[in-house]
Image 1 (spheres, rainbow, N blue to C red):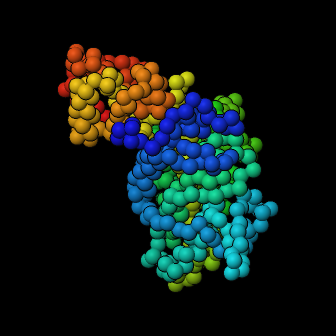
Image 2 (image 1 turned 45 degrees about the vertical axis):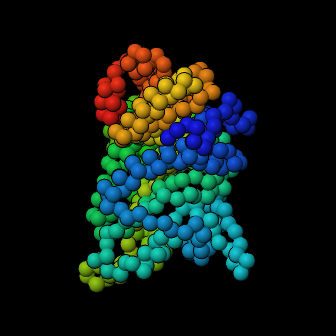
Image 3 (image 1 turned 120 degrees about the vertical axis):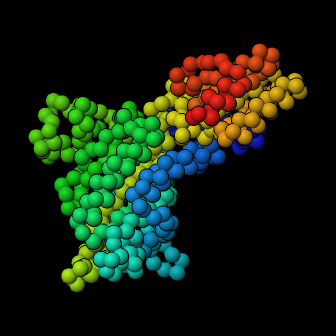
Length: 419
Ligand code: ATP
Ligand code: MG
């Protein structure tokens, strides 16, 4: 991509009312646009980051044998009344609306009720189970506070999955496997070492649900972590958790600021019972389906990555999440010969499958270009200038470490195609 064609622009300042570092940087770097508090447009660069995160999550869902689909955002009131979750007293983040033709609808904040109801058309016998589905979609939540930038949106992208099983064994197999797959996802996103499977409140059948909490100063949660033992407990349940059973003592647990990047929830058979999702088991009995739900906060993750890895110069994306692998910064481009040379390097990198953003602006000064490259946060910055052409040496700077190395054109291609 040529920067002169990219629809985005860096800015010196974020909106004055934006207090979260993640949103400030993402706005300044042109990844998102603030529409209103807690509501952000994804600009092309932001969309690329989201697509990359989604792809990593999607690989995990495939590993679990889950099926992607797109449910509707408009939801029937009836379904939520039946499970006592329509009232604002029970669910305090509903957006609701009215149909011109009469009647109320809910705007999706979650999907277990409609999807469990839909499954009635697809699950009749134990032979139809187990089955699992997932989606990536915008969720709407009327959050009271929206002070954490894209980490707590009123409209945000979530991956949510739902599993349906005939037996407790099938059900807990999926639940347990999902923990491993989730941790692999977070590892690929560069936060594996800082993310903990955390005991949390809820879970109809078991005592706990499980959250995936990432150590992050800007996070809204407090998790008690015993790092060496890999045990983590949400502060909500610290007083009720049986620490001996978890193999830890209170003083091993360090209260730590964290962000919830995902969670998994075990409904047992309760949800299906409420919704009326029954099947005929091997004995010919009508019994409720075992259900689980599995969430990941896609846009929250984008915010967490910014919060965790950014430095004083700007964003630092992990490889694999960044919109481009390489920011190719062209200098002295007013000289037609250098322009041709730089174009050649750009094409050669593209041809080799390297994702390149080419700063081909002619007017911008070197300082401005380097400043933008630092702010945008691609993993590698490569300079191509008059000097590069004369000396045949390319400077490659690792954005995360700041380390610079010099290499020949050939080595440059070898180095960057290895990533
Ligand atoms: P939280 O405790 O942070 O309010 P939650 O427990 O309501 O989140 P779920 O309903 O289980 O979360 O949603 C699944 C995932 O979606 C969460 O783990 C989180 O990563 C993400 N998420 C939840 N609410 C928001 C939000 N308002 N903005 C961005 N991401 C969110
Ligand atoms: Mg939560």
